[in-house]
Image (cartoon, rainbow, N blue to C red; front, top):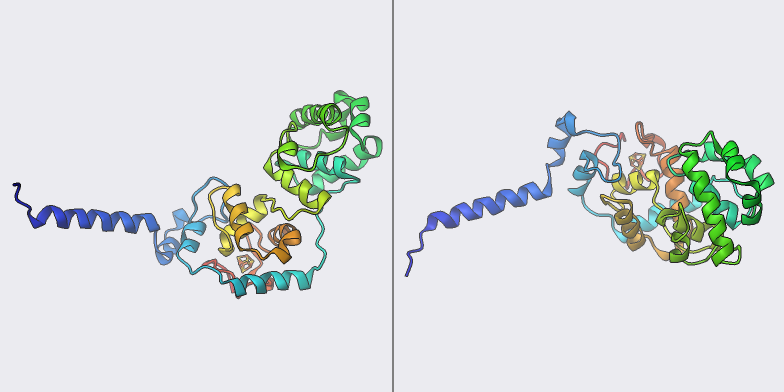
Amino acid sequence: MAKITRKPLLKSRLTVSKRARNSRGPAPDRVKRNKSLKTSAGKPGKSTATKTSVRSFRPWTPAEIYEAFSRFRKANPEPKGELEHLNPYTLLVAVVLSAQATDAGVNKATRALFSVADTPQKMLALGEEKLRDYIRTIGLYRTKAKNVIALSEKLLADFGGEVPRTRAEIESLPGAGRKTANVVLNMAFGERTMAVDTHVFRVGNRTGLARGDTPLEVELGLERVIPPEFMLHAHHWLILHGRYTCLARKPRCEVCLINDLCRWPEKTV
Ligand code: SF4
């Protein structure tokens, strides 16, 4: 029988212990000192110091989450999205156009567009070339024009010209992904979905409400912790919070409604 010595056992314990330490990431104080790791905010798909340091902090309690959303509700009982639209179809088109663009930039282009094309039939009658002229101030407008024409054709061919009401059907439309489906389901049909854009992604990770490497992880995390009574408006509260208060570069922690609850180690209050 082979003789068992203590040395390999100690080495293996040491290795495991080192691995365990590394898997937890650097401690918050070390992260703060290491400026090369510091970032303004978590971005989808990137591992950041923000997220790593938040990871070491205690999770929110259900009572704290209830308190945070009660404050959002009190401050803004009926939050509205800022993408201008006239009906579910124009909302769908506006969301497709808004990928990697600002709502303000999209609104500027769609005001004139929707006055002449607010249905799939009218959009097809307008045609791709003229549509491009309306939206040429929006990034990626050529691809987006193609998608809007293609999705209008599909709406007419497969859905009687109406925007469908299921996630799978909306995601089957050209140019429409999970975020588009979540926005349309929430704003047009009143479903309790959580669309994660760059603002919601940042707020979820920074505050520690729902951390994740991808928008989907943050979406599912937020859905898990936010009480159902807040879910209808939670998407807009978090977007508006990220857009006007929890800014990417210089978060306005001093006027933040939830600054006592936020877990971000770098908050300025
Ligand atoms: S305290 Fe600062 S970092 Fe935290 S949510 Fe508020 S604005 Fe964002």
